[in-house]
Length: 254
Image (cartoon, rainbow, N blue to C red; front, top):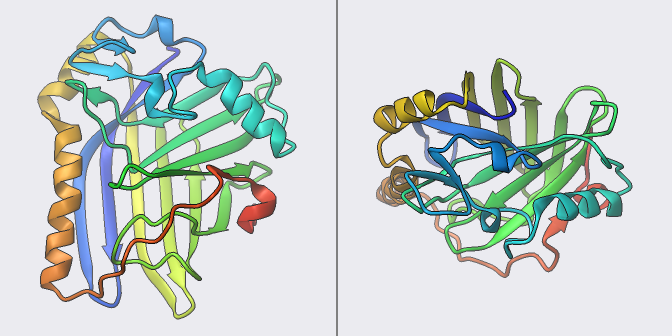
């Protein structure tokens, strides 16, 4: 199958200054950006429906084709993916709505070799930033945080570390956030593969009703819980000047 579903969970575990942990059941869609016209009928492309994928939710966010944007973004960083497959892991729209805290692009070259991963990060203020990392051996990346995501984590002197298992029969994204004093929190995204068929999409709608609304509601509910625990609250700063942090900017260790 060109496209796939990953049914799984997201776990967050904060270790300081207040311990806090939660897990939610969710599912993601993995789409080949060159095969969007072959999505199952229940998964609409740039059209309202029960489920959908919209070009405006990713990349340049202006509705233009995603392929030229990702190829140019990789090329600017010295990474050649011309003619290679590009797949995008994200939450789908449900009844026209989605909020994706993290979307992941998997970029291959013409020989089918993974050459780059682009992590697309969003906050609830409508701001976005992407981290482009080359793939060379183990998919283990470290970079300086650029975008304000949570009022409970600083931006300055904070580092992300991501370990990635590219999607096969399962997918795994494990992240650690650290500052000058050490480990702050961990998050794990994991899921098992299902073929993307109308039957399986209907199953996801039944199993995860109104999931995308629950995602944004859960983010605010967990923020309330942290406030009640008197976790230190940080003011939001300015977004980064550039939309993408390329390898030379991001302090990458790959």
